Length: 447
Image (cartoon, rainbow, N blue to C red; front, side):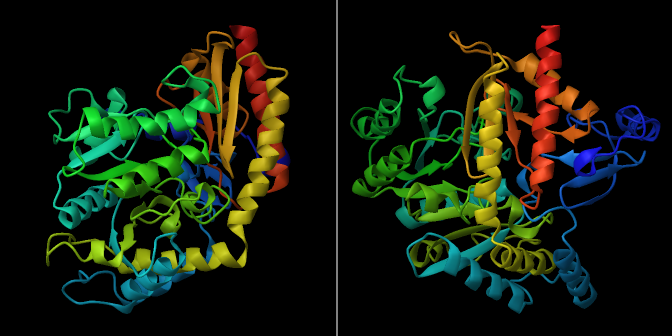
């Protein structure tokens, strides 16, 4: 098949089924799998399973593989560093890699200089530490988050995360002091308004809250995603984020921008904050920072980052040297190959193709994107906008049978999201659109 897709067996194949048959006995049920195809190897935007089937990957490890699977330069950096040393704990025996990446990242983030950077392991861990830094720097203890937000699954991050199932249900009580406001999800405006009024109206809810729900001398930070990821690839109007930033600044409240999923070229710039015209006080990064290895970070204004006392942030494995070596190569590849600019070209091609599909498929309610962060919201009726969650899952399954791996998202589970590596070719993008077209037709015929 075109674009490198090659199907040799039924999907899933016999070897994948055999391996996954062992899962129920050895792995907790919470670790269920979306695609029952067991990976053998991968390169670029293609994944080969243990049965020899080759799939086009639109999942990108949930946004982790912007430079592609097994990027040769990154693999070589990992191999070279692993041969030197694997671990010391930076705060016990330091290494230059940590400082070098902090310097390089500090020069690139859209934060007012001077900037300092601390490294951690996961996105949730970065969010937890950003909150700790904000509380230490301000002496305040309350936070503001948004409907539809996802900031991680550790207990503190869950207090900020919005979706009850599968994340929050039964996991409380959560740390107190989190106030939740409407996010500018203009396709389903929480205030019942039409675009463009939705964006600024949702932002003004922050200002109203200072008069009715919380006090500025108690709120440490507003924590916000520039594009909501798990919430459904919701792209707010830039003026929403700009007004939120302005209101926060007027009240002396810090702006913490969660760029875990939007960062490292995905949205057509190295960071989405650049495209939205905002300057975070603190910014969290993770996912594609290290090409597939666990690494995250908090970048922020130096005086804020210096607020915690010695030992108040950190951890045994944070800033692992092998992951840091990979991250330095990721930055080099990003800039040498212009992957943020490539993301915009990919997004434009996908956006145009999806708009054309919307004319033929009644299930498509909305197409939205920032760069190559593209969401396709499915509805059973365009007038009522009833979420088509079952249909979205069926479309993903139909795509898999045709050799394309995709993901859903959204508070209703009805958004198909594109997180393909930014090294995907134009031919592969067209193949993905062709498969999606066929899958939508199959599901619509069945419903």
